[in-house]
Image 1: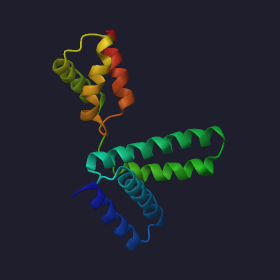
Image 2: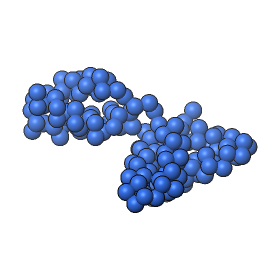
Image 3: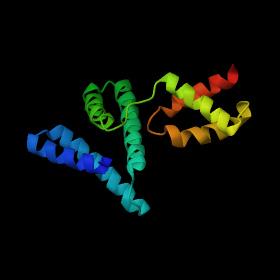
Image 4: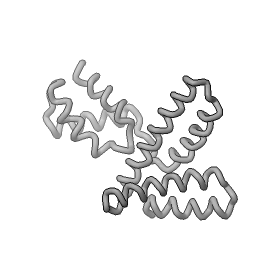
Length: 148
């Protein structure tokens, strides 16, 4: 089942169960997906939907940081609640060991040998790991790999 279909089914279930909060968040997700499809004149596949969800997660985390800094715990809690629902649709994140294995595989494929090849290596890793791993962590591990 595609992610868009899963979201639609969950939206219907949330309506029937009277889960207003979950329903609202799923509607936000669907609205963002539909906005991207209209703007780009394409039908999003599961990988693109995951990219939309990743962006929404990043936005929520940024908002939480700003609300916490401004001592707005009420608004930060709303963002945290939304974050829980959005993250439920993302695939499980890869562990550090799995990322290291992917880096080793990409190094073998690309022939990257030093920090100058980091861009080439990240270019090879991004399509494989997008949505499955935190790309900030991937970047740190790539730097660490070349450092020692």
